[in-house]
Image (cartoon, rainbow, N blue to C red; front, side, top):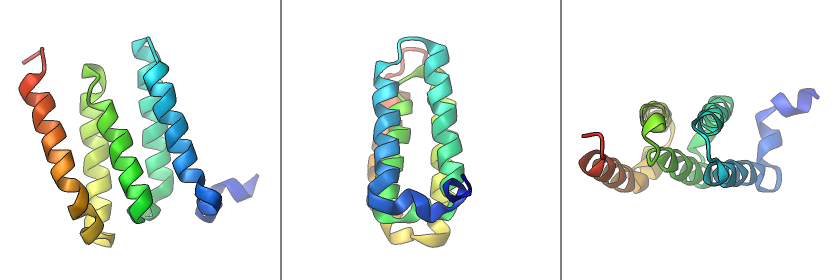
Length: 120
């Protein structure tokens, strides 16, 4: 069971992408607020577990897109912003070039949800 705690375990045959895909599917299927909050917690835990490995190009791309999907739910918007902040801080230190590729998408997506959010 200790092999699961080894970050290299997750990179074997695209396991990170498979886990993020599974979380995206579960998020899309979730009908209740509590389910979505649980999935957001799992995403946060997974991003924390990945730590600096989240800066690898394909993982960063998938992590950013997964986190951006959280923004569409009003109850998860603050969690999504916290996660994006965490990922961006890590990427600033380790892989700024790759982060720059995703910043336009992040800013566009966040601005559109802030601008058109029904609660504002």
